Image 1 (cartoon, helix red, strand yellow):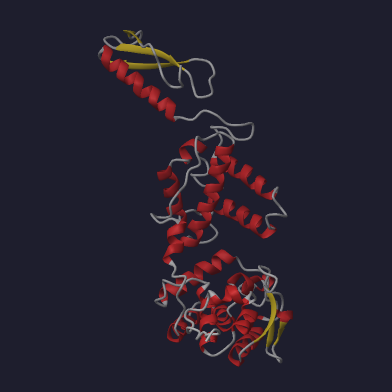
Image 2: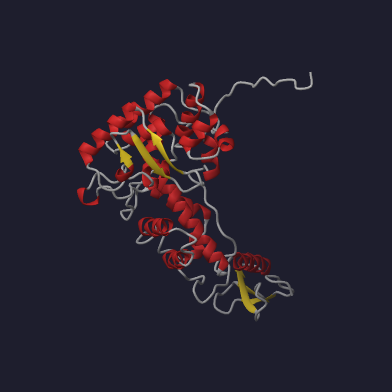
Length: 374
């Protein structure tokens, strides 16, 4: 007999409720184990049969399974712990920074929340999961260390997907649930960014002015991104004060993405003066764009997701909601090309090969080919 199907339904007077009928049948689950009873109650025999079928359908939709580590009765918090352990086991293939971020997100968005205390089955409901994401975005959880926002919601969503994937692999839920971000998926968010557009000079000035007006210490970072076009992760975590020579106006950017990513570049005078002022204000310990708010942590790495969230706010306020952090890189390549720099020069500053660099340039003149057969 196929799972969750019955071939015979017996109907009799209800043994406990006068005037009612009770329907009874037996079925198997998908694991092919022993037969289980299912019942239905109604005022008539037909009504009792219909109720039985509804109850059978509900049982079919309720998943039964799990492993020694994760079961259908495990809470979201418990599954999150198993997921984190699997991530830690991936080190060093998975960087320590990434593992630390996952640990922080679980602590901020899962542990101690009402959602975290749910059993994994109810928590896999799409509506309930997306409700939790909206609460994270609104900063509703006192455990949240980030104050909400889209960045927090994206981080929480990544954690939820990891938890659901883990529960599915252990057989505790029938399929891994996927959640949307306030009606917009991460893919939609990426599609929102115009990956072929660069800032105009006027737009750059607007973005810089907005960044300088913020208390979140992003003005100097935006200036650095605009002047030299590094990846934002390189600027945040790959530029130390020991690599800055203010007298020679040079900086070593210790990128890691390509073989050319580590490079020494010259800085324009206005950027050199900004960094000189920054050094006088915050000191020259650790990273150039490290923590400045707490003296005890000066120069230590800043959280990338927090910085990107602030930059998103800056770009939106400057009227550049189409732009992303990578737009600075594309803009540098485009403006340098317009200024007459060679493709090789631009590639050296960006720390990548010329072929890849050419994709960052917004427009290039059509080359006049010579007819070698004339």
